[in-house]
Image (cartoon, helix red, strand yellow):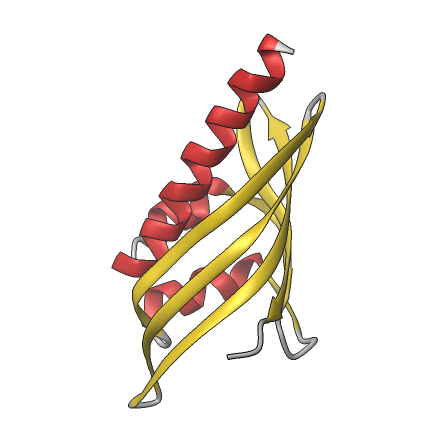
Length: 127
């Protein structure tokens, strides 16, 4: 149980790093913290991979001013984990402002002693 608590803390730290990286356009952190096999199923059902997500951060479109999680719950299964929660985003895309909240599920894997985000799924919450 103590190992699970330590893993939970590490995962939430890395997840916070990723959120900050999306806000600030820090593609190096995104490259480091995403697993090379990363996939995202977005709120419209589209699937994107590692390269597409890194490119989005590099282009800064969408450009996020807020990218924050809350109500997170972490379940650790050895060298893998699942995090559920709610993400709030604000920013601009194609010149238009947006604000949205999503229920997310993130799947984490431990590779070479580091937690990497391997998969994410987001469902848009009603306004």
